[in-house]
Image (tube, rainbow, N blue to C red; front, side, top):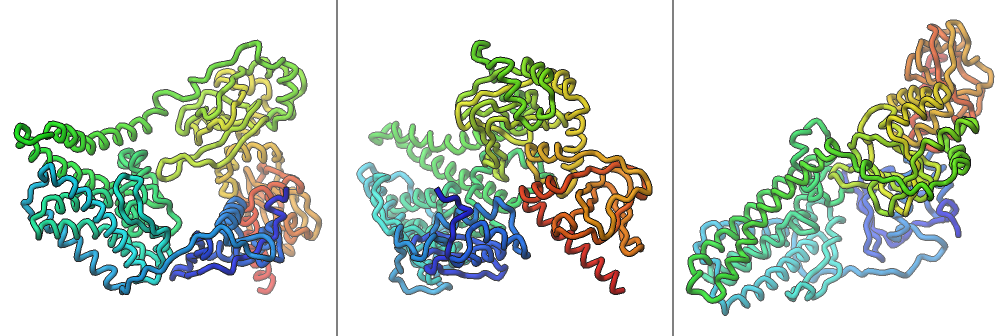
Length: 640
């Protein structure tokens, strides 16, 4: 099977592109009805695929100019663009799948697309405020209420379609819906994205205006069924959840970036209350989240007021109206629902904040039967394959193998939880797990997958910090675990200065360095094992100008002088680095580096350095920028 790297891709010609003022490109695949929102550098990446280069060659080309991406971002973009039909393989563009858009046969203007719905909403809301109509119709008129609700939902779709027409956009999937037991006409307004925020706002406002039109008509005609249907439909469409017009309006008005999922309802359920007490945490879409949470509270208040008013009216007719007790019971549930939801959300938020402080999920794990545990020899042979234990001799491996507990865990089980106080160190013996990290909305998203011989849980024990991510099993797994006491007494004792102490020092130092701050713990430990400490005495030449260099140095302690043609041009201290120019460009060193003040440096050989750079292209990009900067400075000094 051909890998993605080997595929030669070509851009689709059936694409509509709109560039916004900030350089963002809105892209629509006309055949599939799919969309991409691309930043300038992302648009430049897709523009490379003309059918003459493979994905791997495209990535290499992206690395050598100013649009160089993170490796994961690059492949996510290529996969997404391929799945949606923006990129295809071969010379002939596919003809399937297709999803056709339709021009809505309505003549409208952008001014009307805003003015009409705003006028309807304002007058309808005024009618709601001043009307003294009863909300409970006679029993025989409840059928009318259902008919008018269907009319309100249909009118909302028609008005939103008219707003799309005003901006020259299309409608998708026009259809009659009957799966909710209420027949109504519905359209898909996805194409509002291509009209930009004004179009998205006008489309959402127009959908919300439909029920207010019913309210106004019900008030003018003194029709309780029509008035009530307008109330109900307005609350349905204005709900701040899912893809409702109410949520769409908030998303259009308050999001900062175009590529933002509609996840503010998840934020409210997970973090809204706790964020009040954790205001120092900066959220990328804080304005959107706060606006949504505020709006949701107001909407719940409107539901409570509406149901309370109906309950009061129905209670007055409890003894004289047939079916009144049943209606009172149902309305009581509706009145209670907002209160229950707010209380549930608050408790969920509090639990999410306090649970890691009360108990750790890993404490629920239980060791397997002794008979199922592999033999000491088998475990020792397995541990030797792990990066962390690769340098131990056979007696040390066997002693360590005897100390591990053997823990079987079923698939889809949370093994460790982010923010928990960790007490266990894990080695994956069999199976696969995924590493999860909470996003701004508090929803866990997968950031990595681990398999046999991988380890996790070590950083929380080594650095005595809470868990920085969650881990969930994808398949039935078998783990080797050490508790904190055994980890410190046996593992650290067994490995001593050979490994653990150096890893603690190197990992902690690397994590504080901007070059490595974004690395996951597993990758950080792996690269930390490649570095070695080198004692640097004052006056020693580390890199000789004009000669080949075989090492990358990251300064741990001390001071280093950089000179060119015998003239000092820079001084380096802890956290600075040198040697990268000659290694990356394969040329002799263009400057001399010597020790000005005794200290230590972390040294990495040429092969290890190039492997490190190839594994993290953000690091490569930063190093390359530093190289360009230093070369320009050297040239400027030489000319002066």
